Image 1 (cartoon, one colour):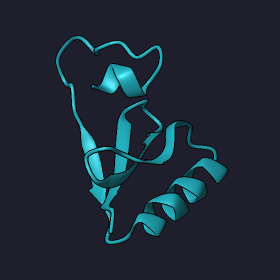
Image 2 (image 1 turned 135 degrees about the horizontal axis):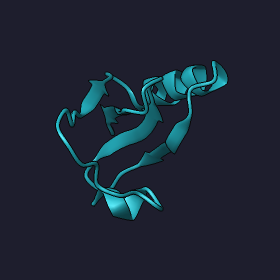
Image 3 (image 1 turned 90 degrees about the vertical axis):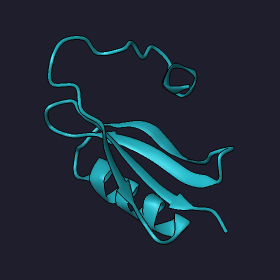
Image 4 (image 1 turned 60 degrees about the vertical axis):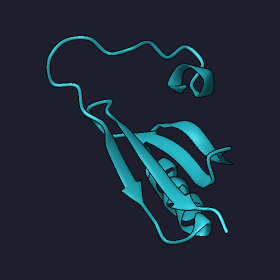
Length: 75
């Protein structure tokens, strides 16, 4: 599923694989935090979109390159 959303994605290898996700109460919060983080210079690897599983969803990268997913339930 991730490869379908992130062009060029390859599965990480080795020890220490982590997944980070941050939930918000409203879809607008995902957009606002994504904008704030990318404006501050953090790479956005997946801009906010309405996912088919019922969430507003986006991904940014932390300074170490770890994906941080932002999500909120759609109304």
